[in-house]
Length: 160
Image 1 (cartoon, rainbow, N blue to C red):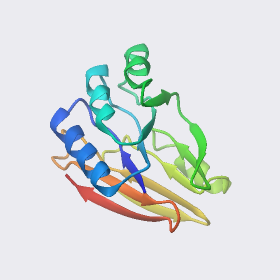
Image 2: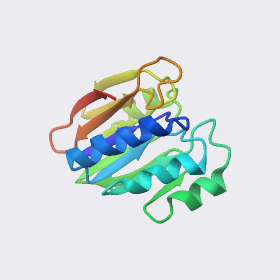
Image 3: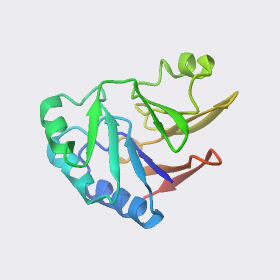
Image 4: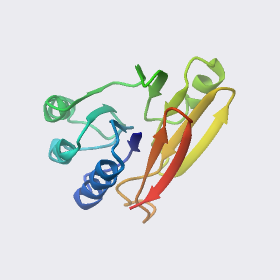
């Protein structure tokens, strides 16, 4: 199972809750689609029982600090971040605008994105695209994450 989060915006209680949900589900990877914001918030992800892969969002200004905070248990880089996991080609990004282009390419099995703060699940051809919504909940008042089964390409949006 892959845990998916985005736009946590330094909301420590919701980040901790997301970690609890992912650990309880036995996730073997957690993806963060940007806007962690500060290194102290990224350090909360160290409590995960799996690796973290993340991309920088548009408000992640302290990039060196975020890299250092995540280096012991994960990695963070500029989007798009493309990698293989559980036999699937995954593209991780933050901004939603290029998602349509990535979907149309047919090159990826799973596309994870954020930025809009709204949960979304889309399929085009063989490609599943997921926006988990906002973990932080500051904008909409709703804190959500997602879990993706890479074998079946099914998704569950989870309210925190």
